Length: 162
Length: 422
Image 1: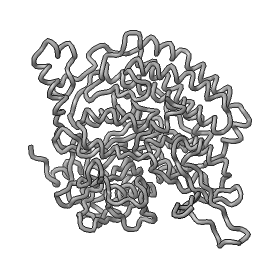
Image 2 (image 1 turned 135 degrees about the horizontal axis):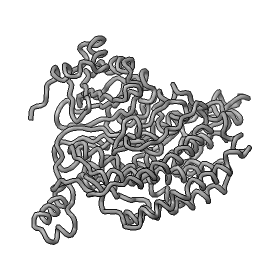
Image 3 (image 1 turned 180 degrees about the vertical axis):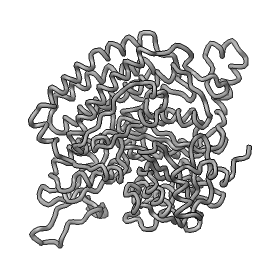
Image 4 (image 1 turned 135 degrees about the vertical axis):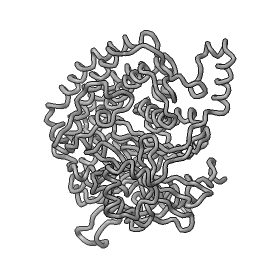
């Protein structure tokens, strides 16, 4: 099975408000697009995630549901930071993904756009070790302060280190 | 004491201001993690000026057991029992959202009967959760009687859960592809009886609380949260609707055939603890209606999808048909592969939006399972709701957002549920 490429997905969903706004305001920001199982996934260039979040918010996607991360170790870029954004008015959601390399994993915080990202980003830092620049309080949230390592990384054993 | 570390009641999370010795120096108060009104092991560090709250910093993670990591090491079907443990007040909701997510990955059609039983049990779960919330919330504020009344009805709901799944709290009744078993014969009659009694019982709780001047004084105008703040801070569920945002996933993004049910979504523009109380009471009444509709229109038919290799075969078939035996053996020993992809499925849990993000790499084990928990996000709004209020109002506000710590910490919540809830 071959997945439809970025351009055909963008063409098929040209009327989607998130895509339309992103293409108008930040034309280079969409690195990839996919539509699978009725869910739209837009891969956003890492450096533009905060602007892209602001654009998507302006487009009517007003509610940040979730920020999390998937570790694709050992492939690169290793970390996919995933944002689920919901629109109360349009009754649909969009998924933004930003890919972060394993060397010095850092991405811009989106707290200026949605203050609710605060806890989610702390959780991603705690469990995956991806840092969020501009976060006012990037402390561990689940694990104890003095914990070594980031447990949800794929190279961290399920039983922990003994 | 030698090398023993000093006991520190407050941590560096907050420091009293301004410098020591100053007359208007604030005080930092530690509340929890072992505190009866924090519903588990929530720790709040509160900066107070006299009785007035200046700052509230939640400190969480005490129950974290790494359930998301554990899920990655299990087969898809083995994750179901883990999902119960996250939120011990709405196990069925968690089962449902996980099953829906995996079914979406598999593109599996679920028979009507299974969907309707799922809706029925989910609404009972909502009643169960709201009853515990009402009882404990009232107890926090000082109305002890309500607790006993609520737990009387909750007991019957738990007995129904036990009849259906063999477990009172950790039900694990839903399966990927349908239900574990056909419910017992007398079950619908029992539920019918309970539903008949419930509206009167809800009137009874309201009789104890709604007109009560002490209750009104403690709730009205407390914990104000505007609609803008609620959305900005990720608040969902009854607190969001109490702030005037008309949003309910059951109605607006229906799942498991909720679109076939008629119900109202109560909203309020009062934005305070009182509004959240009224909304949950109204939701209980609506849940009773949904349960009735589910019972009245309950379709006949199979309770499992026709998907050999994914759904376990019936016990009888397994004993008489070679093919079923092979499928059974393969599912139990190797699991079933799920096509690669990622889905996010959200449902309206009693506390708000409960979402599961499941990523598959094409194998029989999930590559990543992430839970989006309503209480976790709602906790961020605590500062906004408590700021400038009295210290006693913090207790009312915590009660009104209905937190469950197992869910916030993504851990096994049973430990703290043990005393009152089991």
